[in-house]
Image (cartoon, rainbow, N blue to C red; front, side):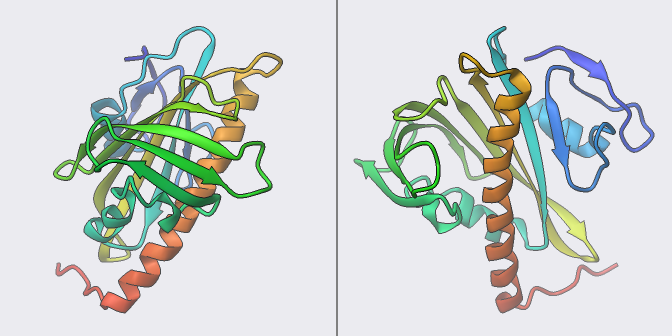
Length: 211
């Protein structure tokens, strides 16, 4: 795991991975993340970026229960259910650790196809990890981990989703430029995930949490 630096978060001097950029909509830039979120990063988002790589974590707070959000995230075979840039996904064989998928990308991005391997899937801890193993894009040695954790938002069941990644920095680009590009894609995906999940939650008439 990357080294840890002290970064203020929630006034508690929360420690987060020092080489990471942390993007959390509920905390101002430069503040870092809250204690619970930092603990999730330490427990589940284990990357070891090399000198020519960058790593980051993006947070999204969703007003929908974790089981509903996870039902969308866990579908390795159907990322197009919430990822707006995916037009089609073909899985070779059944879905399980080691499974490969061919993801077709919609026009407008500098890529058309990505080949990805399922590295880890845990329905109890709500963890999904993938690695890109090929494709006509510049995301070389890209690995990502996405986790979903229950929280309470405005007195109702909510979910915090954390997606982290590590990737090579392409020739001619800086670490910041590479992180900004990947973060923008992830934020778009997570916004779509939130919109769909929250719409489904309204249909489910989720009840407030007592107390």
